[in-house]
Image (cartoon, rainbow, N blue to C red; front, side, top):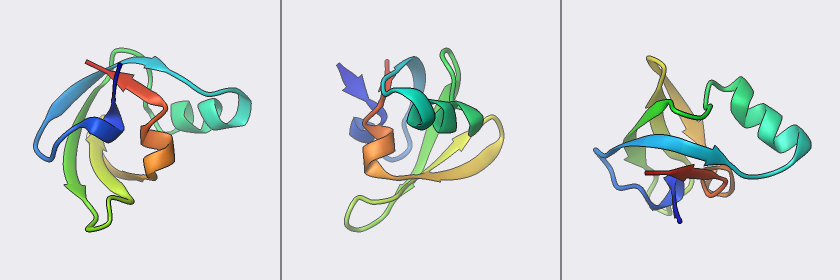
Length: 73
């Protein structure tokens, strides 16, 4: 299983499934990350947290823990 956390800088991935339960999953979906959406990895902080991505035309920063819940291809 590949997650958004494993994606490299400059890579575009597609969301396959969101893991997590309740409020955490809802928060990720509220940010525009849903099944089938493309995500472009713009930057990763020096220590790996946070990850800056472009999703649906806007920039978004995600924690490593949240990125690990997003399964991609």
